[in-house]
Length: 224
Ligand SMILES: Cc1cc2nc3c(=O)[nH]c(=O)nc-3n(C[C@H](O)[C@H](O)[C@H](O)COP(=O)(O)O)c2cc1C
Image 1 (cartoon, rainbow, N blue to C red):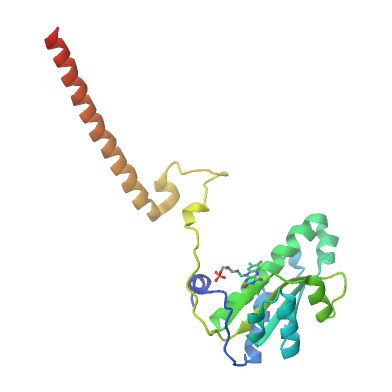
Image 2: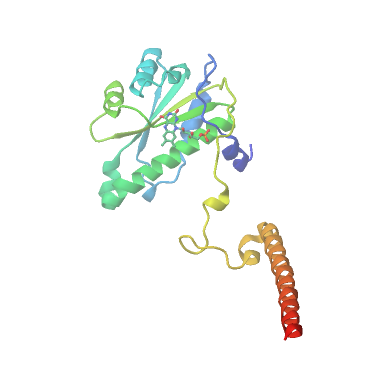
């Protein structure tokens, strides 16, 4: 699958078929997490694969009772070790780099699963202490997400997404385009047309206004 198409068509799946996921696919998904970028190439994350029925049920309960999670035959808990980030990069490492690296790994995993014909959901709402207890985690690590994986038993519509124009600026915060031609390439065709139509309208309105003023002036002069 072409990368952009994979990104565009991925959906969060919350209904799964009762069908096991091949182990090779699970490993490929984790490999894709492994290849994510990380500050200083620290790769300070771990993946815990959960297949056990009872444990998945407990995870669903600990995830604010998102019971649909239980149906997914695989859960992968994504764990970050912030100590390493802090050691090399201080507060910025702990607060930003750790989270960004793990998020990149998670997204890689979602996309790889989708390209393999699998459905996933990124779950972030859970009682961290409870997940920590269920997975016997040491104190120094954090649970960033639970990824549910399985064969989708639903085809969700694309949820509303903002138009790109809502989220892009030029050169600075709230920077608008000065020259559509140079900034937008072929995107500028529509903008150029809009500008041209606008200019035509202004000219037309201006001409009409000019005629009106002329008429009024000549009427006034005649009266005089
Ligand atoms: C940090 C994060 C936490 C999320 N937590 C949950 C969650 O707890 N439960 C859930 O059903 N979906 C969760 N989602 C999935 C979002 O609801 C979903 O991505 C969003 O509605 C857009 O839908 P899409 O993924 O199909 O584009 C989470 C997504 C992110 C990035």
